[in-house]
Amino acid sequence: MTTSVVPQPADQAKEGAVAAYLGMWSDMADAAVTSDWQSPKLALNATADALSRISRGLYADHYNGLVTKGKPINHPTVESVEPAAAPTTVNIVDCGDDSPWLKYRVDTGQRADDGPSGRRHIDAKVKKAVDGSWKVVDFAIQDVGTC
Amino acid sequence: MLTRVPALGGMIVTLLLISAATASAGGWGSVDCAQESSPYCELGAGKTGKAPGGAGRVPDQPGRKGGGGQVAPPVGDRIMGDNSPAAKCSYVRSNFQPPANGVQTVAFHDTVRAVPRVVLAYAPLSRASTLLSQRRGGAWYVYRCTGAGFRDGLYRAPIWLPDGEVPAEAAVPSPQELAEQARAQLHLPSPRIEANPAGDKLVSLPTWLWLDRSGWGRQQATAAVPGVSVTAVATPKSVSWSMGDGNTVSCSGPGTPFTARGDASAASPDCGHTYHRSSATAPGQQYPVGATIHWMVTWSGAGASGTFPDLTTSATAAFRVAEVQALGTGHR
Image (cartoon, rainbow over all chains, first blue to last red; front, side):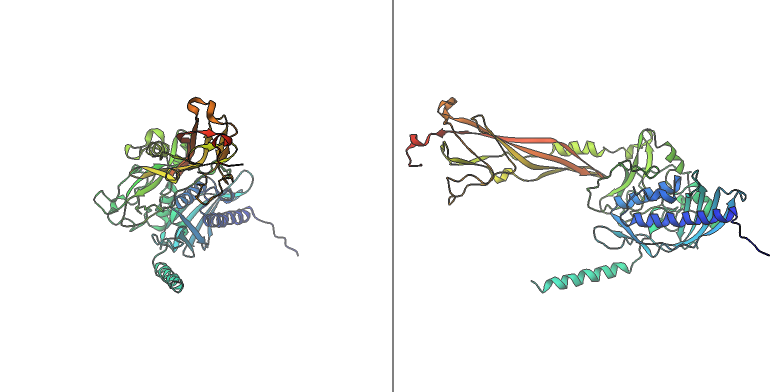
């Protein structure tokens, strides 16, 4: 008797959505090295509110003479996939840690010591785009210490 | 002197180590829900049982936490109160444009070097829904602080405000308007013409041309209102000399002054003219000479910069040019 593994739509959706979610933070981390709020990379895995929020955040850093070095640590899990038969939305829950991803002042090279870093509860909504790719449309990052 | 250099380097390293021991801002600080709440932020907050908005970020304003969209965007807010030692902060118009599908639509040239002081204070900003209206007239406003404050914050994402909804406090002059004011305050020095030979110039003998150095140098002026400061800078770029005999000489600098030990028969290395006709037939037997300095005028501030049309300053003099043989001084 032989068995064949047929990829389930929900599994493919989870895989694509998690990749987009992790890609979004990776893209942001790359752009944040120079606070490049116009980086085309930002739109690879994020769109709508998520893209706007990231770009505006990087612009604020750019304007204030800050850059961010390092990478965040993520442990995303899929909370739900909707609808199961032909998924278009994947909700992701994460406990992210930005303590290895810190802001520095461009002028002095010193760390910006005016905010916290650490483990944060993150929700993210990932949707299927018309071209079949998955893109994060919104995210909510709670305070340090929320997970 | 040489031995002090490494000692200074050691001090800097020590300072860096001290600062590294304090709390450090993480990469999500500028995009988290405390920075800007949204309906989605509040949904997430419900799951974790935490109110959005950053517990403890503004201990003296607990009533404002978690307000979400109920509280109007405190544009130009003074959330810490006027009598607090916080810096004065307000939203100022900027040229920020969010990327659209990864297409870069504008270039941003920031010439502001100083890190502005910004108070970290939670205030619910306008909802994400306002993003949809950004095609209409309006602008992105960035949060800017002036003066000394007790604390740096730095995290305020730009917000979109339609033109009609900009509160009076945020309706500060645009950088361009301030730049006009700064330009009007520029005081450009008057040039003074110098030349060699000092007295009569001679036909076929190189005449050296230069300007008194006190009239040559960068000038700047600043115009400011609380929250915005714009500086206009005028830089001398070139000098046009009209020599009175129909010739024009263009020099890229003020010209090299002739020194007493110099060779009077040699031409100036960078700015000079040789007359081929005497001024005997000119009105008053003199050539009217004019020097016009062209100043490049740029401005920068409030996250923007630009260039004004050139300004000019000028000076005049009269040169008497004689034939060599008429003087009989033995030249040639």
